[in-house]
Amino acid sequence: MPAEIVTTWGVVLDLAEDTAHPSPDAMSLPRQAASWFEAARRSYVDRCPRLASLLREQGARLAVSAEQISDLGAGPYRGGVTVAVSVTEIRASSFDMALRIRTAADDDAPPASGRCTVALVRDADGAVIPIPREIRDEFIALQLGASAWL
View (tube, rainbow, N blue to C red):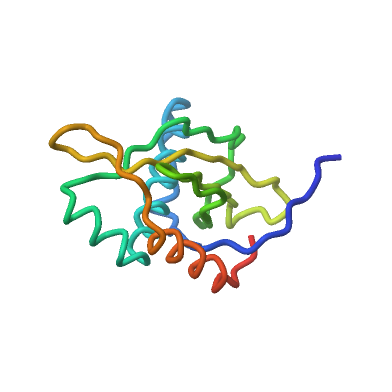
């Protein structure tokens, strides 16, 4: 029996059926899951004004690597999906995010999970920018204020 992880999630998005319904193409479901992860990451960053300010000041972007998403199965994805992300580890120049995806149509279906590593990369020279304490504090505050379970 798989172990259950009980945690709150920093950002939870309920994506409508038209957004969450993949095309019949079997290859589209992994791409769709990746786009859900991207939407949730953007939503997380939208809640981090200091991070957004640092990215603008430095002319930098979020560089995502090591993205992994578990098998979503065949659905059903009618009724949409709920996508949640949290920052799970912060290092000197990168941080990890965790992902959870649940279908709205089947509460008993196991969720898909994922993770990625994110670095702040300056566009002009490709340099990785260290994560300052105020950004770490922003992540921690967001996680401490999390109340959504998924």
